[in-house]
Image (cartoon, rainbow, N blue to C red; front, side, top):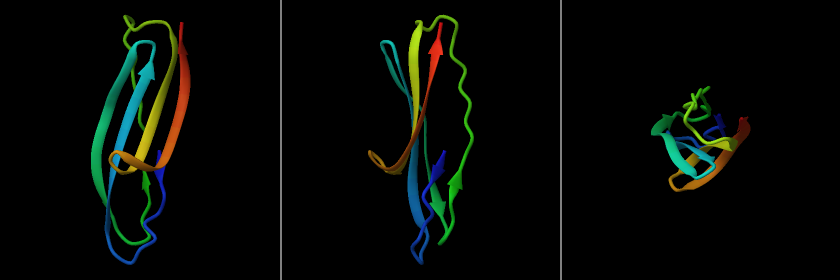
Length: 82
């Protein structure tokens, strides 16, 4: 997940939240805030294990950055649990 750079001349606080959507499921996996210095970017690689008991189907992981609940940047990927 990569957030847009802080293009201002002052530090800026951004909220980061990651949501998992799937068959009968919507869960916030992670939520935190980060201070970005002028010109700084945010990058983080995340992993998520899905329990064997989870229902089969297509799942989407959505990463958001902005001022919660309004995202300025969103990144997502889908995967299939058989």
